[in-house]
Amino acid sequence: MSDAPRPLGPDDVHVWYTFTDEASGAAREAAYLALLGETERARHAQFKFAEDRHCFLVAHALLRTTLSRYAAVPPGQWRFRTAAHGRPEIAFPAAATSLRFNLSHTRGLVACAVTTQRDVGVDVERVDGRRATDDVWKRYFSPSEIEALAKLSSAARTDAFFDYWTLKESYIKARGLGLEIPLDGFSFDFPPGGRPAISFAASVQDDPAAWQFALHQPRPSYRLAVAARGRAELAFAIMSTIPAVNDAK
Image (cartoon, rainbow, N blue to C red; front, side):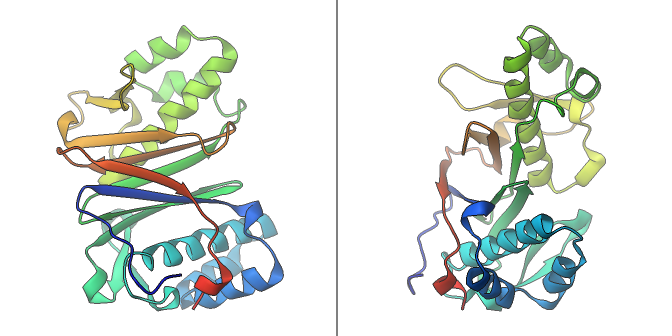
């Protein structure tokens, strides 16, 4: 990793993602584990299954090495605290607390979003038709989304389900209010040639103009969505990486 921090402007939203099967090997995993703080190591040790431990390990190595792209801080020196509703944030060093981040993982894929003093949320999901059942989207999605999904073929509906789901999760994570926001209290539309657009029911007090979104397919079987607060045009960059062993210092 270069000693010079990477530029991150006030209107930049950067997302880095890693496929966990590309970040394996004993030496790499040992280097990643050495980065983790006490609390992270304790959580890592609690996972029963090796795949879950590895996913957690890669996610937190990605978080630390990603933050170190934007500040002259070795990956192992970051310290975190938990804010209201469980949102993690930077506790140390104080000079880097203007960085905002969000982390997401699913089986096989992890992602980290970073901004400067801007609310951000990211969600990744593996596309699985067994999860995109009628009882789920008819119960949790908004009326306009239910109507749109009902018109699609089974295969197209599965893809669209995960488009909606990841966008919804990214917004909820960016708000940082947890389950206080009902999933059917806001809707997404997909303007031709434009980014996904949000609208709100009366039950959710928010301004659609205050949010911007991006949707990405890291692979056809995965979805990644990112939400960021901002009225001025935001510059989204979504990039693949593998946290390098030589980054783990």
